[in-house]
Every structure is written in structure tokens, then in C-alpha cells.
Length: 419
Image (cartoon, rainbow, N blue to C red; front, side, top):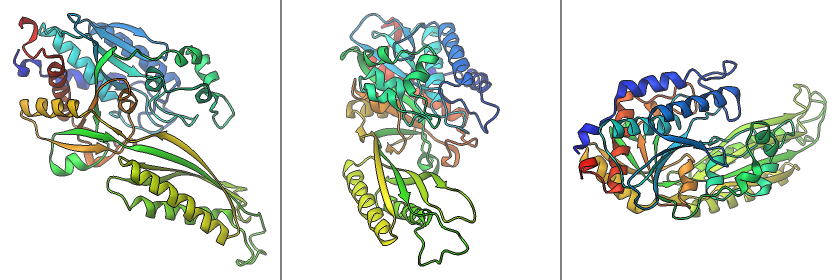
């Protein structure tokens, strides 16, 4: 079959985006749909109905992932695609959602054109990809790939609620998640369509990104302990100000983040006690993360953070405790899948460039199960994780078409049903 005949219906995709955008938390800005919230649970029910309407056989696995299966002729393991439909607080309309809705449109076009794959095709809406109140992310894909442990479910939120308890309250079983890993060989390849979430493609005028690696993430919670004093009577030389130590540490982290190519460092949250204008802060706690596709850079940056923060704490007579939370190591995508994505993009006449991903994705975990690749489409002004997040729907259509061509080439069924 001519690939042009499998081009997606962009208006139908736009309507899907409008439909799922109705499921939001009105108490927060943007399109907030955080994991386990009522809007998220309602949106997942919508996704299930949409999968069924597209002709997929749908079930929810032990990890709470919503999975639609399009039966093939029975050749080998399945081909899999998908992403997530949860958002960060104050998030946008495209992050993750494009990978689920784009796959749905691809399935519609395959069925409408009578195109049958040799492999079964799985479309997955992974449970809880975004970091949540419990400090964990990629709950569903970690379970699929067997990387969760009992300690994973002991993480607590600010109110002391265990993740395992929260999941149980919503009908998910931590015990089942611990034993819910998919078998090796059950998936022959995984491809995730996603927005870039950065400015590279738009600035270069390139239509598609072929992802070469997914950044590793090191997170640290630094707690600075000083001494509370009266802000009017404690001299500047006598103070043990925990907040000024944290402020210096934040700038130190920023400087470290500027030292590596495609590497970044961010302090995203700061807690201060006692939090009164007329009291010298006795405690400051900062949440920081380092990201890079280079394991070497991450290791070096971690050592620099340790050494430099310890030095400034000694200089300011402040105690400091660093708690490291490794989120994931850098993950290269499969060269074989990169080559197919590039070939599919060229076959469709679309420009592409190889690039790493600075964001984390479910694909990073799926890469431990099967050869994995990612396709990026441009993000306007490089904005993401904010209400202004936007990708033109014509670009969404190009991404969906490239996803379709990639999976057809991986399947070996480019000639379609009449092959």
C-alpha cells in the first residue's frame, strides 16, 4: 500500500485532543490531570472507550496500564507504541497525550485501509508517567519492565500517605505490580511518539527528531540546618542562616549545569523554616535534579555537587544532609530502530535530525524489554510542562504518519493487506 493512503486525519486528531482536554482539574492552571486524580481517572475511561471504538481489544494489566491490542497475522512478538495521559500540575495539552492519541489515529487508518500487520500491535496508555506527590515517576512502565521493588511503594507524600496505599484506594494492586513484568520476547520493538519539549526542531526548521538517547536523571534533596535567631538583633557575622547557604548552593548547581553538552541542572523547589520575615532561617530544603544523556557527566556533576555544597556549608557553619534519588540512568535508543525511523521519515519526504532527549519517558524503561525508539515533533518556542505548551496539529499529523511508516517497516508489511 502507498504510504500516502495511510496519512492521518488531522481534524479527527484535533477533535480527540479537544475531547480529552475536557478532563482537567479546574482548581489548577492549564490542563492539569495528575495521576490518581478524578480528572485523570475519568480521562482513562475515555481513552478505553476510544480504543474500543478504534477496533482494539482493550484490557488493563496488573500495573494499571490501559492496553489496546490490534491482532496481526501472528508473526513473532508484538510491536508496541503509546505514551501517557497524565500531566504535571499546570501542564499542557500535548506532553504524552500525543503518543496515545496519535497511536489511536494510526490504528483507525490501518483498519480503514484494510492494512493488516504480521505482528500484533499494542497501544499503551502507561499509568502515571509524570513525577507525582510520592517522588516517583513512570509507575506503569517500571512495572511492565520489572524494575519496581517493595520499597518503591513505601514512598510517602507530604501528608505521610504511602504510594502503595494510594494505589490500593484506586483499585491498583502493588502486589500485582511487583509480579506484572512482561516476558522477554513478548515485544519485538517499542516506538514512542512525543513532542520534543525543547526548541531544537523549531529553531532548525526540522520536521522530525530521531531520538538517540534519553537523559539520565539524578535527583538530590539537600537539607541545610542552621540556627534560628532574631533578624533584628543577630549580627550578620554571627548568623548561621540556612537559607543563604541554600541560595549559594542553588547558584552552584546552576553553574555545574552549564558545563556539559545537552546537560542541565535545575532546583525546582525550596522549603524554608520557620518562614517568618523577622527570623533567621534555621532550615532550608532544596530539591534539585541533574539531567544528561552522558553517564560520565552525571557522575562528575554529582561529585561536584557533593564537594561544593559540603565546602560552602563548612564555610557558613551550616550542617547539610544530601539524599540522592537516582531516577534513571542514561538510556541509548536502539540503533536499529533509529535507522527505521530515519528511513520512514525520508520515505515520507520529511526532514529529520538525530537528537537526544533531555526529558524522561516511558521509553527509557521499555528499552530494557525490547529495542526501543522515539520520534519527536516540534514544540512551539520549546515550551512544555506549562499551559503554553503547543504543537501545531499539522506537525502532529506528520509525527503520526512517521509513526505509522516506522511500525509498518518494523513489521515488514509496507505492502499492506494485499501483500
